[in-house]
Length: 275
Image (cartoon, rainbow, N blue to C red; front, side, top):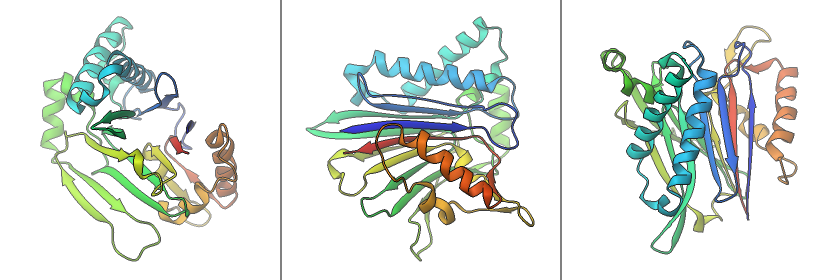
């Protein structure tokens, strides 16, 4: 049995929520998230366009999910998004948005979820004994590479000249060893397979936009709150029936706010509960 749920909330420094997500169980369980760039116009619309086109691509290929590649998915989504934006008379940079896609497939008698992240994003695994593994995809400095840059040679070249690095950080909260990190090409999407036959290792998988690392404590002076310091409280749900994210996360955020802790960036979480 698989249960899906999603949650989104605008960041304290934003006037419009530029995150978007969709999730469905039928005809197969999937999660799709997007985080629009706050410095580009109309990315709240662009994020929605990108998410629904990603959904359409999955549906078109529902009988061949094991053959989808990060390149084919990304290219199809962004070039069709360009056409939609033109039809709506929107600026092309409205498509400056990340994309996280998670879908199931089977191969060689084994079952997997595949996660592909274009831009930045986070994957959090919660084990049956309530420990966590986190994987973060981020850029230094904090400027994601968007699929939309592929549409414009000038913007793509400008980004290249910035010499921005992209890192994958594998962290196990509550352990003393430092996180492991791997640097990959800035324009290369990150992907991973999650073996569904190892459900004893994790009972819930969370996919998150960058807002999950944007918590600040402003009681005295504004200081960054590390995810590891709030992760146990954040995902400690009393029950995981029904819309457990929509029910539980607002309670956690209210508790954090009472302590002076708020997230300045839009926050979106998609959850996959296994069994």
